[in-house]
Length: 229
Image 1: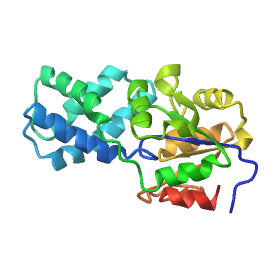
Image 2 (image 1 turned 90 degrees about the vertical axis):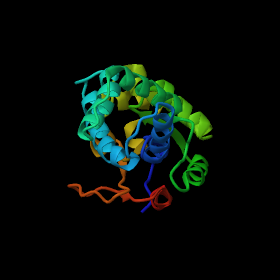
Image 3 (image 1 turned 135 degrees about the horizontal axis):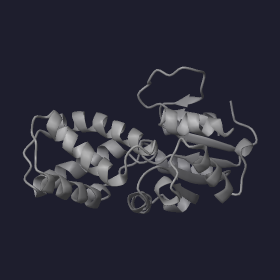
Image 4 (image 1 turned 120 degrees about the vertical axis):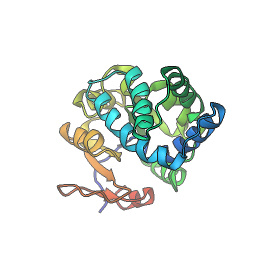
């Protein structure tokens, strides 16, 4: 069923449009080669993805800062692999990771097609908790920056999803109101519950069919947005 009265569509970026897992894996492959780190990449990523998720949760809840996130997620992953490395190497890997992360910019299937389709009838926007310098590069290098009227970044304004204030800030920047807006993202707490708290409509991008409580508009692929918009 098509949503009514929607004028503005807000997207999360990582894990929603920009294929973070794929691009991140390629960045780690590159920096391990550069720094001669000998670990099994698949084993590393299996631990890292779960650890990174927990560190981002702490970061968005203001429990840790940017530096601790970047250091801790790598250090904890190597410890989980029983492959401890010194602080200097962790720092170097952390910096190299940010440098090379946007060398590859794979998007989810049909991202450009869907953005072109939506841009004919809606104003498009980004709300992201990611680090500003990296998120901007992702949008530009993947050639989707031009689709978005506004980009609200949690690091820039000092407020992160699911804090209601970041959504109010984004709505104000977009010159729109909650009742005319929908939020699309993969983060159930950050994107979906956060946007609902300020009265926005929501579409949950549930790529892996994670079980959630409640009745939400859900998609497993971006093309499915055409059912609602």
